[in-house]
Length: 391
Image 1: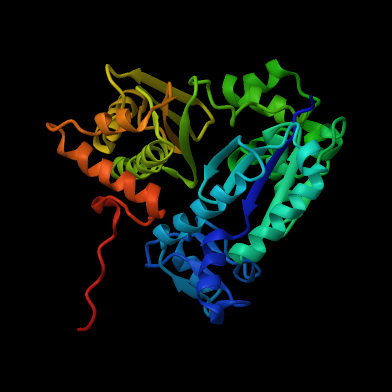
Image 2: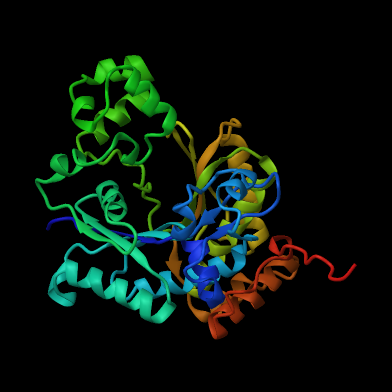
């Protein structure tokens, strides 16, 4: 059976949510990011016409677009909409891999008999995201995740493009070097210094030459992506039956405190999803990817199933502290593996450890998630304090 992967990317997601919630902002340059020393987290396509880009200093964005609407990041709101959309996508496939708050891969292999042609499914997804959630998305389809991601960028915004089998290299040859995911500005500069200005020219280099110029990891990566070969950056390791969540940062994460907050956020998403599905598992695993695309993973099997968010978080934190050497991070992921279904009686027993107050609190929150879908319930340390109003 032919592999068919669909990559969905919510266009200008943060800014689009702000325009959705504030109709008066539609058609105007919206820039999510504030403070003279802050950076732009996202911007609308109207703002991009002025040269504003993600990760740009806010001060520079203000000079380029003085009439822009500068707004604070409302991560809780973005995650709320993201969760609703991702849950809806399970109508199209049981195998979904969310890689950030606004991106996901869907495995549509073998779904044509049930859902019809893959392109028709893609158009339905785009229509439903627009009609039900008021947002625009771009979709790419290919045999591999890597090419599907490149294809979703190809016709942005509101794009749909499929790379058919046998068209991998011709498709890659239509791209700029900077379009190849993972090939950053510095790498492009080094390649241009070698006289390489296109994927076609890059393919003329032997793998040992690229490894000599760029090191083993980056050299091999460049050799593969120039040929449309999936380098495997989105292939999660098999953790038996598992549930995981990961996020890719627009700018590399370097701060340990910020990493702790991200880790808690990811742990919360995984823990309550496991509880909502009435599953149980004792295998905890983490994944870290540095800015040079080196991936480190670690796992640990507990003596009993995960019974509380605090337990899960602190075990993940311990694994991260062992695996992370301080290198800038572009991706962080966590998960619970070895999952199996449990009956209601076992579920009650799992969360009834009288010595673990945290487990009992988490059991109550899990039940609220299950009954009412109260996804806005978050740990207090994830809630940003409100600024006092007035003078």
